[in-house]
Amino acid sequence: MSKLGSRKRKEYLASFTPEEKALFLSKTIHSEKSHRNMAKAKVGFYDRMSDEARKLRDKAISEGNKKRWASYSPEERAVRLSHGILSECAQINSHVSFREFIKSLTPEQKREWVLRTIQSEKVLAQKGECMQKIWDNYTDEERAKRIRNIMQSNAMRPSEPELLLQKYLDAHFPNEWVYNGDCSKGIVFGTKIPDFFNVNSKKVVLEVFGVHWHQEDEVEPLKAHYRKFGFKCIIIWEQDCYSPESLDKILREV
Image (tube, rainbow, N blue to C red; front, side):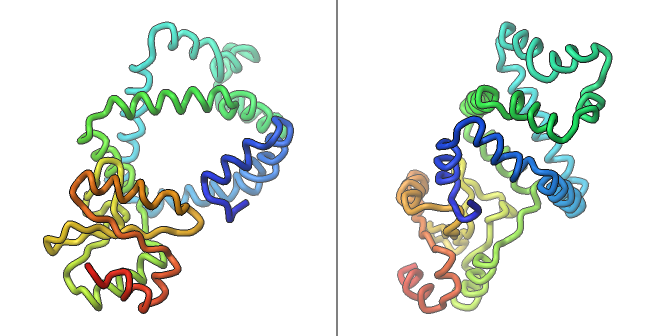
C-alpha cells in the first residue's frame, strides 16, 4: 500500500466494501499505533516551527474556516448545526463537551464514531465540495498567497533527490538556480510551486518527480500549466538526481 501513488490509493480504497474499508482503516491510519506516531510527529512538527510560522498557519486555518462557514446558506448552516458532532454530543448529554464525549469512548467506539460521522463518505464529499467552492472564489493573488502561507508554515525541507540536484546545479550552473520547493522564495505560478527557479533571465523551472507521489500522466499537464505563464518546465525523476550523467543529458539545452 505504501508504494502506491495517491491516485492508485484512491482506486484501491474504492474497491473496498464499507465493512472492508472500516477494517482496513482500523488496522492502519486509525490504529492506536498510528495515532501515537501522528501525535509524536505533530509535536515535532510544531517544535520546528517558528512563532511567526505558527501564527501564519493558525491564521490561514482560521481564515479558511471563516470563509467556508460564510459560503454556507442559512439552510446549510442549520443542517450542519443539527447533525454531526453537536447533535451526537447532545444525544448523550446536552451539557457534555466534545472533549469529554470523545474521552468517554473506547478505542473501538471512537473508530466507529469517526467512520460514521466525520470520516463518512457523505461528509468527506461535502467537505470536498465546500473547499472547492472556497478555492474557486479566490482570486489568483489570494490563491498564491494562501499557498505561500501554507507551505512556509509547514516548514518543508528539501528531499534527498532535491539536495543532490541542488549540489549538481551549484557545481555546473553557479548562481543560476534557487531552490523554491518549500516556497521560501515565494514563487508561485497559479497553484504550482516550482522546485527550482532560474534567476539568470531564463524562463525555465525544474520539477523533481518522486516515483511514489507522481505518475507519468502528470508530466504533460504540468508542462502545459507552466507554458500558460510563459515558462518551460523540465521534469526530473528522482532516480536521475542520483546520476550526474543523466542530469548532463536532461539539462544540456538549458
